[in-house]
Length: 187
Image (cartoon, rainbow, N blue to C red; front, side, top):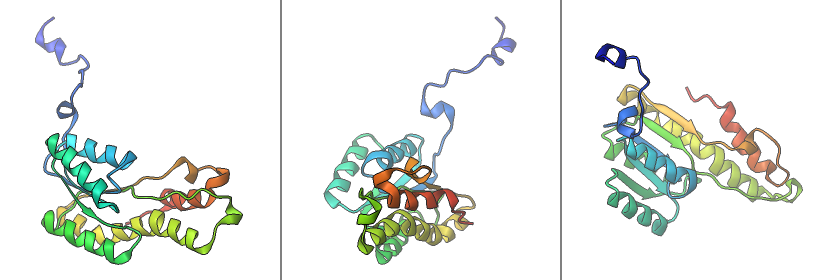
């Protein structure tokens, strides 16, 4: 086979570096210490992004930061309860400081699940679900707007749930808060 024909053969992409790169891009992932958020932090870091994450539990965050450091990932973190407005504001101030006022990627992942029959929910349960699953991500997106403008581009991702698209008996209120992610258009 000559070299001209080789250009038309499909490539076998086996490593992150060969597919595409996020080298030099900045990312904020809320709720990055467990589950989907943890996996997102690792994937962004593998592609070369400089990642900042937050979670509400300091010991959990420290354990993850040590793990990522051993893997050579560029990840920083801070303790933040995203359901609290003042902590969201401090988070974005901190992110702005470490990323020199620029942000390329925001992943609104932090969330909470309360499983009950709808009739059993009280005002505090509903406020917790709305505040954490919807208001926090929307507000962090608003606060991040100047950082996206300064970077010249950006992407916002809301991590939803299948419960946001279909009814699940003991997750109706949770599902309603996750369904907001499907409807939202920040800009």
